[in-house]
Image (cartoon, rainbow, N blue to C red):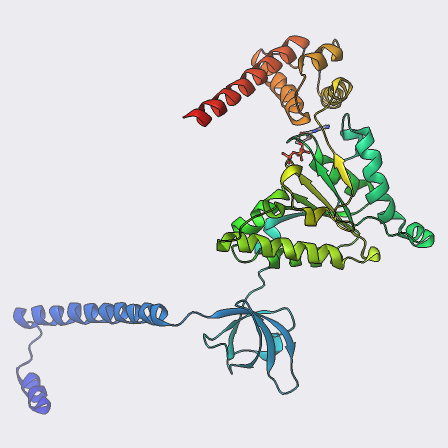
Length: 392
Ligand SMILES: Nc1ncnc2c1ncn2[C@@H]1O[C@H](COP(=O)(O)OP(=O)(O)OP(=O)(O)O)[C@@H](O)[C@H]1O
C-alpha cells in the first residue's frame, strides 16, 4: 500500500500546487506538535514515577565490612548491615557518610551530599571571639568566678590534675534578659583562647523535629574537634524545664534531647578541654537533674546592674562615642534604675540617633535623657499591653 502511495506521489507530485504546499506545512506543524507532546509525556511519566516511588531512608555509614557490605545507622533507629547498589561508587563511602537506603532498608542507592552545614547553621561557631572582660560593666564578681571555673582549667588543666581535683565541667548563668550572660560567655572564651560554639536550646527541638538529640551529639563532637572550646547553650530552659507529663511526641522529643545533653556532660573527660556554659532567665523551672553534682553544680547569678554597674556600662558605650565631654554618669545611672545592660546600650544608640536628627556629630546629656525617657515610655507601654492581654 505504501509503495503504491509513493509511486502515485512520484507521478503526481507538484510542489507548486497550493494544496500540496498547504498539506506539507500542515504536516510540518503537526510533526512539531507531536514532538512537543512526546516531551510533555516523558516529563509527566518522570513526575509520576517520582510520586509513586517509595521514600528513601536516610542513614549514616558506621563501617565498611571486608565483604563490601556496610553497617549503617538508619535515621529510623537500628543499625543495619546493607548492600551497596552497583551504581554507587563504594570508594565514596566512609564512616560518617550520609546515604539513602531503599524503603526496605536493604540497599544503599545514593551517597548524599555532606549536610553538616544545615546543622552548623543552627549553631554559631566563633573561632576567635573578640569580647573582653573590659567590655562588660558591673559584673566583676561574676567575671572572677567564671575565670576560676572556666578560664583557669582551660588554660592550666595540669594544675587541677596535680592537686587531684576535677574542675567543674561547666556553669549555669541565670538572671533577667539582656544582663550580659552571652557577653560573659564570649569574653571567657576570648580570654581562654577557646572556640566559642553557641546554640539556642529552643531551636534544638523547633527547627529540627526529631533531630534534637543528634544535634546535641554533633555540637559536642565539634566542640571536641575544636578544643579548647566553650559550648554556650542559651535558653537552656527550653529543653531543661522539669516536666510532669510527657504525653505528646514533642515533649518526648525534648526529653530525649535533654537526656542526650546530660549524657554528653556526664561523658566529659576533664582533659577534653571542653567547657559548657548554659544560660537561662528561668532558674525556677529547671529540671533538678541538670543541677546535680557533676553537671551544672556551679550557678552564677547575673542580675540587673546596680547603680555602680549602670555607670560602668554607660561609660563602656559612651567612651566609644563622640560626646560633648560633659556627661554626668551619676545622673544617667540614677535615671535608669531597673534597666538591663542591653537597655543601657539601647539608650546610648538612641541618643546617637537623636544627635544625628538634630544635625550634630556628638551626643550630649539632653540626648541621653531624651533617649532614657523614650525607652522608659516604651517599656511602660509593653508592660501595660501585657497586662491588658492577661485580662482580655
Ligand atoms: N553588663 C553588661 N555590660 C556591657 N554590655 C552589656 C551588659 N549586659 C548586656 N550588655 C549588652 O546588651 C546586649 C545583650 O546582652 P547579652 O546578649 O549578653 O544578654 P543576655 O543576658 O545573654 O540576654 P538573654 O538572656 O536575652 O540572652 C549585648 O549587646 C551586650 O553588649
